[in-house]
Image 1: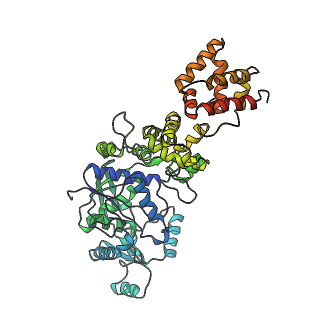
Image 2: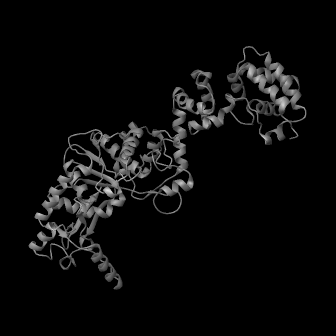
Image 3: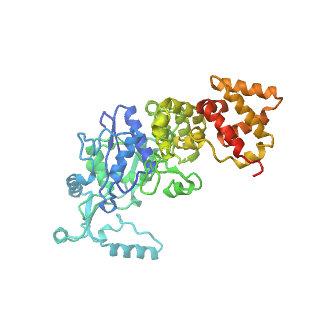
Length: 505
């Protein structure tokens, strides 16, 4: 085993990066950083029929947005490239020939029709057809044909695949860093295809060759690859190589019901499952999530630090991450918890950064950029952000800071706007007109004094006053709102309410 830790994230460019793939990348990144190693991005594009234009760029952009940028990748070459499998074909051809020469692999010329007939024939007898030691010498391959026949078939361009020859009565034992000791009896396994007649390897061969040549020390991947682990370990043995350490991560499960998280779950329940937008599917970035919140949430899906702490920066996670604390069972995805994390990070953001993010929202609402200073907007945001989980919610929470209400909450009007209310609000407007300086403290003192002098209760004055200023019975401390919008605007809104609210409507 090499001394320096090297891990890889190896997605296929067949579409957007699923949030489960992001977690796999994250755990690889954390492990590499924890041990002073390298995090490699390798694009596994051997299946050209499923290649989707733009998918590779999407993967790179998503990782960059999340801050888990690889040390080596197709965009950032190191000493172990190329980093796209489609550019490594000569290496795979060399290694598959080595397996054939050493008797670990063989040519198979069976047509799809022949294999289908075999499957149907077995099914009629209540059996399952497996291409392995039981029947491979009776099938159309280089084990049953003469060397001359094999050469003639290949020369003539006959389609073929190259299969791994699984040895009889072989028991594969390996230790998974998450699941512990695993043992598999090989007689029930099939002779997997390693190489296709189009000159491209299957995942199994390319994966092993690349991991060895790139000096990968730890393979951290999803548990869906557990059934392939016996073959992969046996391939290392066939080549005479030391195998890396393996760790298979638990599935990310649906929020409700059984099975793993899917795109349909996100569409049905209204949450993203991709880091960035892909066609009509929203991404976490576009939905307003902070990358730090996404990282923190994903880190705790299937892993726990062993403490009650929940908020971790990426640097914090590097320090505490331990594969030994990754659980074996699936981790249920909780969209509400995801929102909770974003809320926590929003509260921690500097006001100047939140203002920068809020300005485009204001622009969309017709608020000119120069109409309000950054200092003014910081004051607004400081009053409303406690109730927000996303920056785009600031407008609904505080639109009244920018536009005087012209529509008033009907339910609040019916409950709070009495026949005597207009006279009271008008009188109070006259009082506030004289407050100097117009601060929250001075306004509050003047209003409280006026209420006491007129032998009124706060419930008779404060709700309709808030209704006049805000348009509804919502918002932060009312006198703070009044200070921010100023005396002239405050009094103007009160007089507009008196003239336009009809308690009988």
